[in-house]
Image (cartoon, rainbow over all chains, first blue to last red; front, side, top):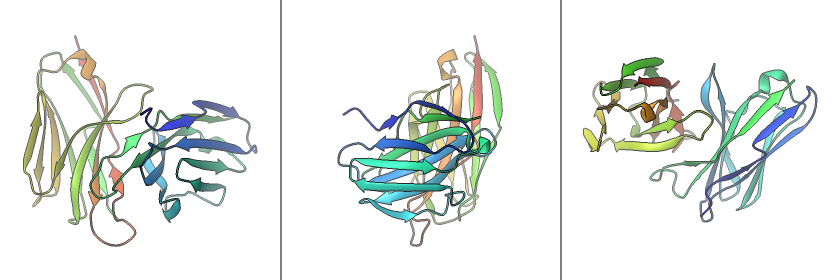
Length: 114
Length: 116
């Protein structure tokens, strides 16, 4: 298995633009997580899905952020409009059983908003 | 919700020395504590974990201890090597009902540097 796949690896955009980050979880994993990593705040959980349904989005910073999971093999995190303070590394992770199994992380997307 | 504090934020040791990183958690419902290692520019990867029914777990040069009463757990790395240099994150997971169920709450991370 190729693991959790994220794209793009790097994204540079200008303030106000829409940004879409993509994630493909490990096949068979029914939980998917989106994290944001910054120096100031460390690793923060933004939202997670179970069987394509959002379970907890309490970590989503504001309405500019939205996430979808249209099917078991694909999820997106969208920021519209983007702001410089959104600059961070965004990780996607997946697992098969939220209470028992470890989370496997993707390689991350480094986002820079100028 | 859960709150995890991690110390120290940076740790510098000489090759061959031991390194200890400590974490405390706030929610007694947490019962799973993984440690992740993140090398520069790479993804976090699990290196060891411990469940609340165990006080200590060891895997070669790394070990984790858990004190449920005090709500703290520690990572121990012995005979450190330069390739151990990375950021280490502790985390806690609640296995109880409610919206926090199953979520990992991470500590702030420790930058470990092992000097040759």
